[in-house]
Length: 86
Image 1 (tube, one colour):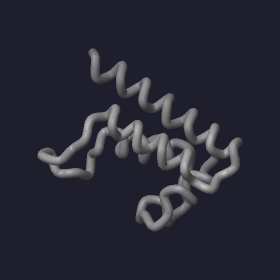
Image 2: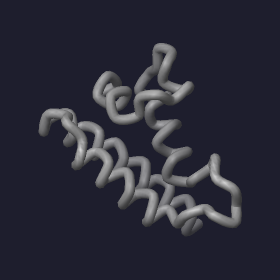
Image 3: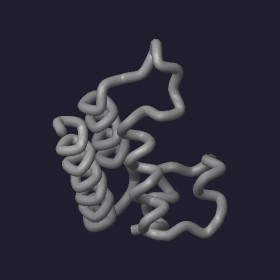
Image 4: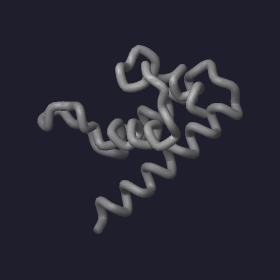
């Protein structure tokens, strides 16, 4: 799953080193929260989820790799959604 993730998010400093599943989850969380975008142009978590899902589905990964990454993205989205509601 980590290598598949690196294929989708290549050319990013955060993945040029060895990363763990925890690192992958952290990167996904940052992406969903749009943490590295200026506050005036941040997108909603739902829009970022849609973009992440499209990125994976439009990639050249195998179906199994896509399903693994999509599962992690959805898990992180659910965690964040619950946290945002509380």
